[in-house]
Every structure is written in structure tokens, then in C-alpha cells.
Image 1 (tube, rainbow, N blue to C red):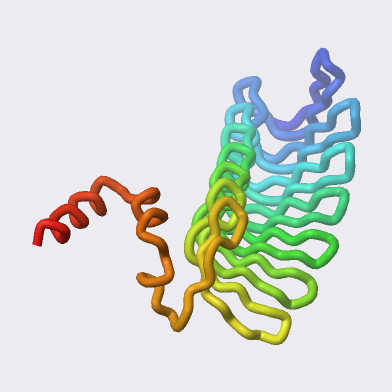
Image 2 (cartoon, rainbow, N blue to C red):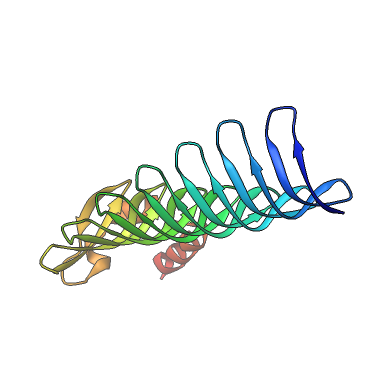
Length: 197
């Protein structure tokens, strides 16, 4: 119990609170390359609120669990990129907001560092895409907003627009073959029941 300084064999140094020979409470850990963690420890693990500074100039401030970035936090890359949102095991996961230094912005869902689910992407010139994402690319129904604010509804596949919907009549605009290609087992049962009538 108490406070102390310990230098690891790899040259990393911990200065902070201890309990039963484990880092426990507030502490600062510094590595030989200049990386640094300032925050809470629980039984030897980074846990709770903390700030991590990487040697390249990147900074993360937020929640940790079992020495990993977990929970809510803000990550600023040295090149100006910025993410504010939820994390799971060091990856953007859940809802968040990502901004690039050139003015592009994404607000939406992530799954293991990849845009997945609903999200809004904005370009610096005012254009927007509001819709579904899969594997980091626009995929499914979405709305494209032009620079002058005009909205057009369409469908995207693997990052490419494949169709504009006309007069919001989405059922006529989507080809039957395309619908069948994305059919789930539940949709198949419904389709077969409807075709029997």
C-alpha cells in the first residue's frame, strides 16, 4: 500500500499508487520511446479514466478496461484526425463522430473500427450521404444531399450508387433480382407465401 516508483526491465517506469504489489489507484507510466499513460489503475491494469500519449503525438483521453481502450473516449491522431465516441478493445465500436483534417466528417455507427449500420457522411463542400453502411462503404438505402440542399433517395452497393428511386416509389425502383440477392430466410418465407396466392 502507498506510493512509489518502479522501473520495469524494458525501461518503462511507473510512478503512483500501489496495493498488494500491484499498480492500484492513480499513476503515471512512461515508456522509453516517450509514450505515457496518466490515469487510474486497478490491480495492475489500466482501468477507469485515463489519458494515453503516444510517441507520434497521438492522444487518447477516456475510459479504459483491462489496459485496453473501452467505453467512451476521444482519440486525436497526430495528423489531425479526430474520433469521439464509444470503443471496445481498442477499436471504434458503437456510435461515434470521426473528423478528418480536410473537413470531412462521419457521424454514425462503427463495428470494430469500420463504418457499419446507419451513418451520415459530410464533405467539406456541403454534400452529404445519410444512410446505411457495410464494411466501411455505403451499402443499402440512403439519401444523397447535394451542395444546394437537394435530396435524392437511392440505393448503394459496396460504396457505389446503383439506383436512384423515382417519386419515392422504392418498390418499383428496386429490381426483383436485386431484392432476391439480399433476401433473408424470413423474407423468403413471406415471398413464397405471397406467390402462392
